[in-house]
Image (cartoon, rainbow, N blue to C red; front, side, top):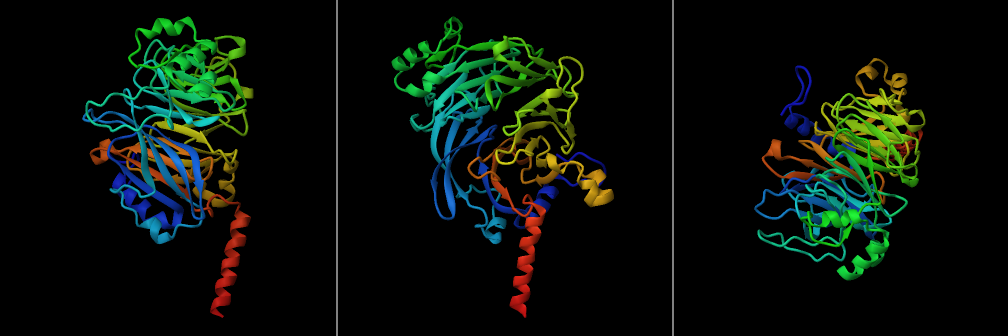
Length: 464
């Protein structure tokens, strides 16, 4: 596989070799963890322990096997090295074929089918939802689930709750609400489905008590009609609402950060739809041509609820202002970000800085952007600015195949976990990387220059 472009473009291996030589300069910390099986999703869990030089934190990871052993949801413990602690020699001396000592498997859940997507509940991050190749959403209490050995013939782990309501497979579109214990999903049936798991969080006991509590949560008759079709055993909950407006598969969904009643969705129909559960099951706003191709991902800015990001198979990321959105026709984005050479698979706003977001794509690159830098490159870099995408300030090129998922760490905001499916380029498996760029890159320019001046003064005084 070669990078797209004209003559002289480097191969993936050449690009990776060049990137690796720059690691000690560009990164404050980097841990590379070789995976036996490909992975499609990675998420940070709760922080467990704080120490002088590093913190211990849960990490959730999917494993997609070839059938020789079961598919699993992995709960790992990760040692997150604190900023300005790791030595440059240590950062540079990683082995891409090895498993990182910073990542240790804590528990394995044998998952009924492949784990396509993992999302944690903000109000209780030990509760996670998973999507697989079925119409159901599976809810897990990862702390109370027993540890299982993933051997051929092993029985599937039993979910703590099964959310039914889709008519066809729902594989990727999955979100948890920041403000309420709500779960949102989209699927091949073109539907967006909403559930409330309020009572489930407070019980998580036996099946009998779960069934009783779910009844009080309003499990609808729809759940009973689907029960006979379900392949996954576990307490069942029907939807709180079903929303129809897409004309093709729903690829991603996201809640408004300030309201569990408002959410958005994108799909293979090139549409971006905003929904308001208070006004019924029809779209509040439907932008019919948000991109020039299928939409793969969407994220809603947690700091400024007017800004929504979308990523597409047209290789671009677009930022929309919901105050300017109108139903029908072509969407008018605030800005179009062009820095990828292949389909964009994941976009996510930073939990720390309202203007910063990341994007990953099938080109193997994870880009970091700052919307405050748009337009400023022309002032500083002259003619070079025309070839440098506006807003782009960091390219993570440590993966050698499509970067299928990544997640900012809210406990250590500039630390990112990213995962790539390396099956096509390396003959199997995947790569998990945990990394943090050097802070000289993202800190305010005047602050960095002031610090460098101090170093200069110190060096000169030592040599005098």
